[in-house]
View 1 (spheres, helix red, strand yellow):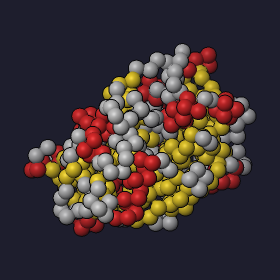
View 2: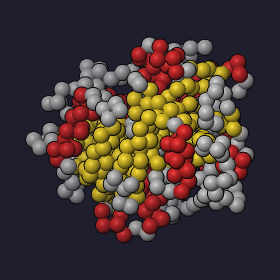
View 3: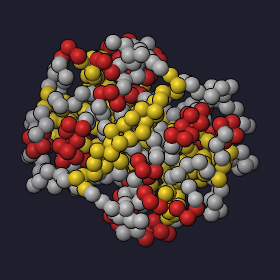
View 4: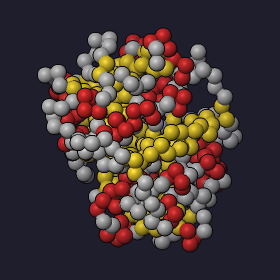
Length: 221
Length: 221
């Protein structure tokens, strides 16, 4: 890329950006994001569904997954239900219902379920307390473990333990990796952009003495 | 998806998975990840470069970006340099150098720079202390702000303030969003899988009284 085609924002430029412009810009910089619908229920059986684009792998042993909850109204309902009941579901989003997923970010009043408002379907199974999204191909049952307060801007990292996973059987590789691309899971960018993926390659475990090779792992089934 | 094509792992199943299989499986569940090369330098001018797949948007005002640092050797060198010097760079990864990016995760001894070992090029500009990756199209200068300890599995959320951003000028939308797909930024999945993206659509800000519409935002240039 030649220098003349480069854009540049310095610290002062960023400070001076119009507020919504800056929000869109800074939100883009952290790259493609992990997209999931979080399903919860309060103690009065009122269901809630909200889209999050900040899923984070925390660790495999114990199996922990995290997400960032911001101090907004929509996200607070999810966090309150999680803390009150201890359980939630994470459901991957596919192209067939990405608009409904996005729509869960509207500020519905607490007495309206985003499942009903957006036309997505609650699914209960194996006695798990919280509702899954029936339309989702990868569904994860999670038990709340911990919340880590991020004081610098008043957000919360919510951490849960993975209790159960439902997934398309033909998407599991022999080595345990799940082919989310084959499963149709989407990724998101910035505040409002949704993307499919095309695999370039899987690479062998990196060792200092040689460059990585492309792996050709078979599916388990 | 019919029930017979569904895979299922319950809590006991997950506990019983072979260790590497479980690591690959659980790493996949959090979805497509934000990929970045973090460039640092210690106080003796020794450069370091490491790939991270856990970039997280923390907030836009102030402009904050985070990543998870695990207690491994490779990631510890990055974290030590960041704490020692206060500065680092985040560089997006494109298809033209994704193998070199992956290779930075090999356990090179501290006295070997992953820039030299993998053939990526250091770039210094505007008096910023830490090295950028010259091959990268989206380069972010970051000043260390805070580390949040995640005690449940001994990882650290590292938070920094965005000081400057270099990006392809033709990828900036009128509303401030950056088109990382046009810029060629990749996303990753699990431990070792790299993916390009194809945009499905940008959606309008969600409001309770109507379903979102697809946006057609122009580029600023």
